[in-house]
Image (cartoon, rainbow, N blue to C red; front, side, top):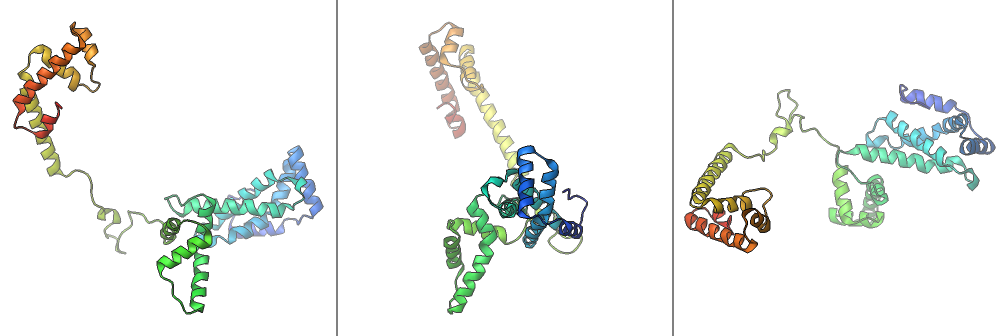
Length: 292
């Protein structure tokens, strides 16, 4: 049954006018779809039980989702049930379809409740859809004996009742406290009110910090160039290839290029670093650590 373009009322009216299937007809249609992939049989089976899907969808209206979308998801669950139904098990299709319809609606509600993923495990689903009901019952039971539960006691009792960790209850409590809000919404009802996004702290570098960093980098660069100028050409080459390249070369590769042993290249590198350390004594700690 295509649902686009129909209102809630028209969908309900169409579903209520659909035929009621007896057990024998239902079984025959299920076999026709399973064994022969008879699409007409599938359509008749799904249409007959669309009233069940709509009835279950209406129970989830309190979660704020559009009714038409809930019915759409219920219809998808109904079709999944029809596709997977095994008539040989001796169970009525309506009994089997209830689980698939409910699961499809619940998945949709949880996906659209918040941009932050709420959770998809069976325990998290149970907590999402039962937390408020369990909390209300626990409050009534406590009030009946003259007790008042604090927030920690309530969360602990809910966790025990539903069978989930305490931190899941704390997380879900925050998720159920309200839906998402746009950062571009104004903080007041006035048209020129400040948007919430303007209240967020800007964690990007401030202009003063950028100027200081640029100045420090220029100073470090000048110190390094001065230290390098005190080396001979071969020493500068070794330092450049070993320390100033993104992919530093090995002692062995430099030795092959210069016609020296790996140990001799290491000695020349150590001597060059020694000269540069001496030139940079008393300068920046960061530059001095460059040679360690």
